Image (cartoon, rainbow, N blue to C red; front, side, top):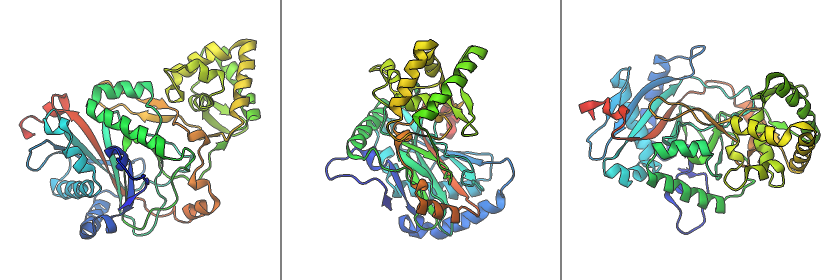
Length: 411
């Protein structure tokens, strides 16, 4: 098993140890390789790639402290789901996730159960667009695992550690969905990772480590993306200055700042949230000062972006303020994906959840491994063929939730 994040000696918060792990099943669980090969073949036969079908929701398994076995909710044949669930459970044990969950007071005292959603992806190709960084959660995900059936190296998931404070919308959702002890563990891990990791460490990418690859992470502590061979947009102060006129015109015509604008130079639509959030990452800007001590770049969503524009950048004086801000931001590397980053998605099983966007801390100035010429060549040479895998979402669910109550005596 490969620990992708090095740690200094000493006490390391448990979620910091689990933040990201990747490697080959052949090294993690060699005795289970043949089982995975057999299951992967059955899955390929049962669910061949179809246009418009991204993934198949196989099942959700529920685990409660002291319960023998598990409860599986599925619309598919349990003869397939049970061995899949058992394999993923073994992966969680081997990489340390299950030991963490089983020791938590909110699990032991029976106030919460663990729900594991399992999805199968027949063929998710690498992005033909620029990388779209996001989190796989509505606010209640603890861990994510991807298990690939690759028999050769393939482009690896792109990712970097999220050491920034959660955006206000994400934090509010988490307060209602996750145990206080888990939130405290996340905060301790963030503080440790912030103090020990290089802020300029490139976004991880390249190729997988061998075959039958897996990657698992703490969802709230990582931004990730399907691999892409396209570079982000390099933004200069001069380019950003030219954006002001079209945005001001849109505001006058429609009465509010648009979510996206069509950049005539780049020939693509660009997220206004990403643009302004990346400006706010520069501490010496009026936008950053406008956010104050309580808010940060990660809090810049469309509502806040519109409010900030109205208060800072409208009129002749506002135009000069905008020009000064982008001039300041342009003094350091500035890259945009063109998309707002999804920090949380709506889930009917997560009351109060909604689709939220954030500015990933440091992404606009952080390099990517996939932008390195040699790494990019490797990715291009290995991006063809089927990219199929299992994905598991490990959720923490209150025992008195409607979702758990619906299971009745089965749990």
